[in-house]
Length: 330
Ligand code: SF4
Image (cartoon, rainbow, N blue to C red; front, side):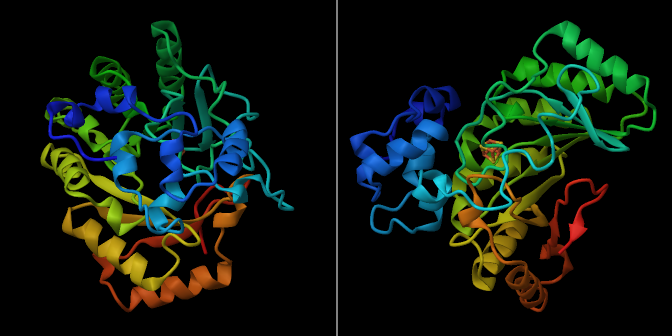
């Protein structure tokens, strides 16, 4: 899709209104086989904004950004050991509606069940539909009361889905509710919006979030080409508002599983003042097995990257293990 010269392109709501959510003939131009894409789409729906589509390649179906955004038959492969919910996110009893706890000092609040893009490598791809989300003032009040009753909790993670797809007033209500508690040192927002819908990070939103002086943003760039001028500007608005921004990328076969790709990503992030924080080993989730990189290769990449970049640009290579109370170094 051609970039539009009008103001609509810079309007995040326009981008969402014009998102492609069906397998259209236009997608064939990106090397997509329609029948295959429709089969995948029935199980794992498609969603692509015009902005996200503008980054795709028409020449190379194996282009890393195409792999991140377009359905592929690999998602339907039945691989042993791959399950929809390895960390029991859906089945683990909630502390109260929309609030879950896996680690002692922090809790996850499900703030939204929508995202700007249906990432093909998403570890929650089977979990968002029907997820328990905090929607009403009463549910938010109950979540805050639960945190207050547990003074050992010092960090609240707003996630989903993508919390930054909510209206400004809703986002600020969430943050305010937790940030005002003296026990809370940080309200962390997990969002891919700076990558997939950077125009959503408006100056007003960035200033509003920065004013709390407790907000941290974790985002997820997986490839250096995602660091567009728009994405860099979105991150700059957050950083300039006093918000620390870190990146948690996922190690993905065909996307960033080479030392060159990781070098370009990490140095590119440092250049825009986003800290390369974690490289995650892809979780054993059904529908993303084709993205998994063998552990031995991941370890080698970590060693090779460590001799190419200094500590500030060097992420930690980790994996989540079911039942573990920490991120495990690979
Ligand atoms: S933005 Fe995050 S939660 Fe949403 S589809 Fe992408 S990876 Fe999954």
